[in-house]
Length: 251
Ligand code: MF3
Ligand code: CO
Image (cartoon, rainbow, N blue to C red; front, side):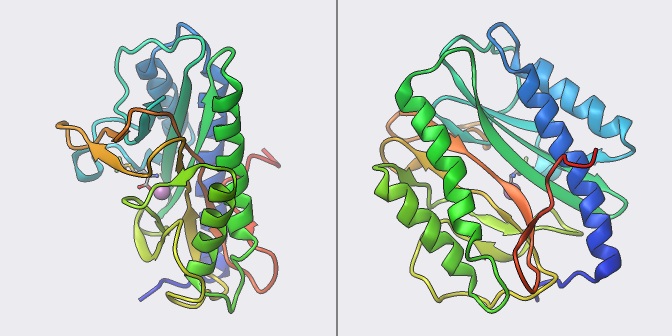
């Protein structure tokens, strides 16, 4: 069953998601050469806790941190550590916050200092692919219409979309129904209905779409060692335009 949120639950989702989006923004502001991924993780953790929320990822299936911080060829689920960000890196930061019974989930990729035009294009296409996808996140459409639009846009720009990991419903659980792939044929999967909340999260590679999970069980890297980017928001399906819930406006 795909959970449908009522008005009260939607306002709770908005609160959790605003905290989550603010944590992403704060993390992004810390990105510069010389900072460690662990320092960013600590700031994310402390901010979420300061808001009376809990980091959604901490201890989720044993995950050991509050943020996933994925540098360069790491696609997702990079574990924060003493790694020092250096000029020219790109870094994907994924955060989640649980507040009064509901989760928010969002991510973005940031430039460290000055990056190559190729890396900047990867970041820009990945972000725009999310917006291309959610043009189809409307009541009456099917879930796969979103991923189809993401894939078309990404591949039109000569990049590839990760298949092994996908977006998901988000609400009382960090991961709930439906599955939200970033690829595939249109017109498949469940119909979207007002009150569904989904995390749309394209992961885009410069080279092959194939990825590998390292021995730590989390760190997911591109199979060819080339760069990857990630962009994610929690989105509410309405009877009109989709509403992006992980926003900082109004804070
Ligand atoms: N945004 C990621 C996801 O949707 C974050 C989960 S990471 C984990 O799956 F550490 F919590 F597992
Ligand atoms: Co997610």
